[in-house]
Length: 111
Image 1 (tube, rainbow, N blue to C red):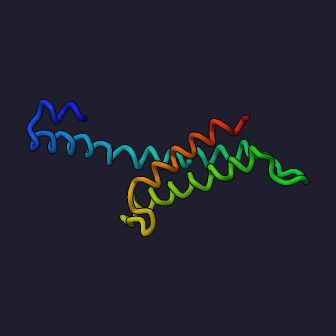
Image 2 (image 1 turned 60 degrees about the horizontal axis):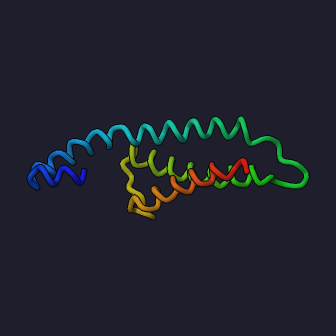
Image 3 (image 1 turned 30 degrees about the horizontal axis):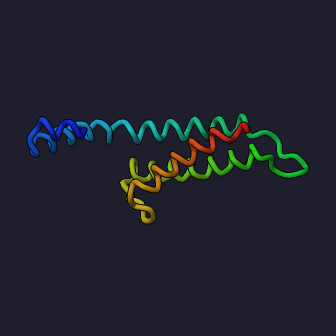
């Protein structure tokens, strides 16, 4: 994207960005909802029974991941279907950081 501004005028760059974002706005919400739905299905398959000692470290990390994933899913569902903008964390920074956190948690789950 940064190379576009070197070869295109400001107006052409704005049009090109909007053309790309038009497609991103169509695909990303559906991808998010599919990811959340598959996560809900998979958590039921891999969570396992809770022992007498309490939750294992795997189950704790999986629960944290599920919380952030469900929050992202509810936020995306409300925006896509009900056109409800988030009242809290209105920028894209917190959802982006949540996705990064989910990825890092995924890396340490089996450790």
